[in-house]
Length: 216
Ligand code: HEM
Image (cartoon, rainbow, N blue to C red; front, side, top):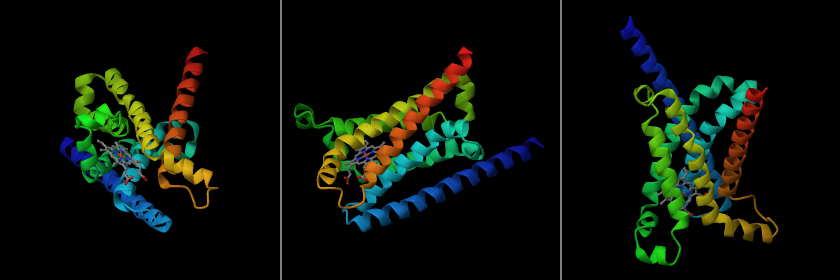
């Protein structure tokens, strides 16, 4: 009986991973089509990075969305799977940005103060790696649910670092686009950064609402 239960659980997990992976690749197709339509070079790495950010952002937004809106309740189960697939996309982005990462280990980069755009992405990736590593029942038992939840909250710092990473790399282009009268649709990096900021705001609203309830 318990073997059957374990099998059913494993199959369910597989289904959630499959759904999240298919969703990730659908987003990737849309992102690549959008960037190509805008005529932006380096489509693959940019799209992979944007999808990684969107999946991780959605994974973090689901608790807030589930709290404020009933329609999202049934999707809250996808938090872990969207986060894990998003992390896999972030690793893919890292492989495609290998030369940029290597620059981080050069003295010239640090002496010129040019380490921040990549350092923020690197630390965010380390935060997400820790989250991925402890996203299992064994870690919950080992750490206890209180500490486990506290560690997972660092994900919001990871997301804030991603916003910093994208802002430092892309804000000059966003400014030019704005100063030239927004002749084309916005860059995907700008859309993704706005979605990530809104998710962080949603989280603050959730904290505020929960602490008000507790205070009553
Ligand atoms: C060591 C880790 C990382 C390195 C070396 C890195 C490197 C880069 C580089 C070089 C770019 C510019 C790409 C281009 O303009 O073609 C970029 C953009 C970007 N990165 Fe990262 N990154 C890292 C981590 C991350 C993480 C963890 C995320 C989010 C999960 C992320 C999200 C983004 C996004 C959204 C963009 C903008 C894509 C666009 O222009 O549409 N990066 N990154």
